[in-house]
Amino acid sequence: MTLPFFYEPLLASSNGHFQLSEETSKHCIQVLRMKTGEQLQLTNGKGALFKARILSEDKKKAVALIEEELLLPRHLKKISIAVSLLKNPARFEWFLEKATEIGVSEIIPLLCERTEHTRFRIDRMKQILVSAMLQSQQVWLPTLREPTLFKEVLVSAGYGLRLVAHCEDDARNSITEFPPFSDAQILIGPEGDFTPHEIKTAMNHHYLPVTLGETRLRTETAGVVAATLLVNK
Image 1: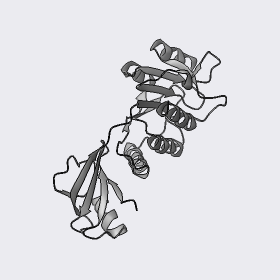
Image 2: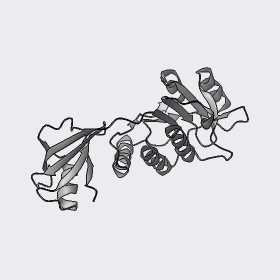
Image 3: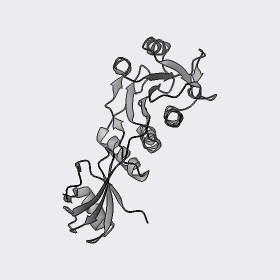
Image 4: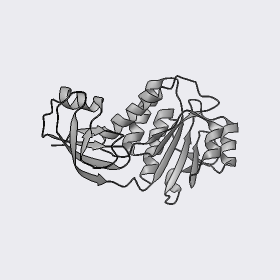
């Protein structure tokens, strides 16, 4: 049986006792009704997996004994998805969940010329990432950036392979055609696509144009398809 799995960002090392956060304490003691001596797993979202045992049953300040620590390497590829914000926040949240499950390293909410602005609640978005990380039994939490202007992403990119997905009729390659790479960033535009000016600007910053298939995809679907292709390339 899989042990209960929780996120504790302040857990840095396996030095003896650790006081669980109030949220984790409540879930363990009040929701799951865990008792002293029962085991659980913890991660700090930075590659560490801890096996621990409940020492006290306080629903606000439970204490666990760290018994084992395992450091797991990050995925061999560093994948960044820079994707336009959406008018419907639920669709963007769905993308965040799926991209985390797939194993991307970084997510950048893009502000493009055609982006329909929406309120961005970063605390809620980060919690979605945490839930998806735990659900998929991972120990690396993707980096989630604040919403960033399109041109600012272009000038700050430090990735070896830079791609821009668009729907124009210009010559574009498939992601499957590129040779193996260790890190990559792909830009995904809003509903209505990037403007021709944005596409040209991206290419001037060494982004290569790519297609994600024969059909026109919603922004969040395009992000998931791109993440899947890049992580598994």
